[in-house]
Length: 288
Image (tube, rainbow, N blue to C red; front, side, top):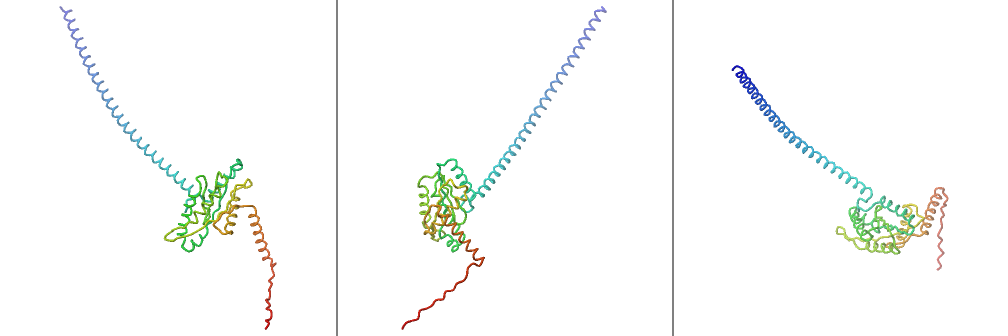
């Protein structure tokens, strides 16, 4: 009997130990599940915080990027404005002397590479502008110049360059010139300029004297072309104004002769080479 009793006691003990182990195992599993759930909760919270951080950082980067783009756009706009102001007339918004000279220099270089291409420069001077400016004031004179610029724009072609050199002097670069383009454009300009102007209840009149210098392989720079067109313009003024004149070499010879004579006269005056001469007017005796 005793061995059987011992066996039962041993079986009971082992069963009790197994039950204890099972309880411990179940408890460990529960703790493990709780730990997993806790970790999953922490993971979700971390992901939420991370997404919020990423979203916040993304918004900051987008705002910084937008601000940078705005700064770049403002800088480009400022650079464009500075370039425009440096190359255009402040009153008429036409290209100025610097920009015109640059375009003319390019036309001269292009002519040397392509001799068949032709261009011409029209030098335009307004008649009666000084009287308008002095009589009615600079404000009216400025309005008059703006109206002149608008009329000139309507007379030139899209590929031409119209510029204001200063005062009442304007120039036109006629590119890709055909046989009679210069005459046609000059005639349109003279016809347009001579039409009456109504500015601040004043009716004004003016004319244009135009000198034309045709392209020439001998031209080395823009100043030479402008010099010859200017000489032809003064010739047009001397012939009665309101007309156009083409430059020829005789004009330069006359200008050089005039300048040489003036220099020689000044030198002669400085050296006291002139002697005053008095002529006595004798009246014939009256016959009775």
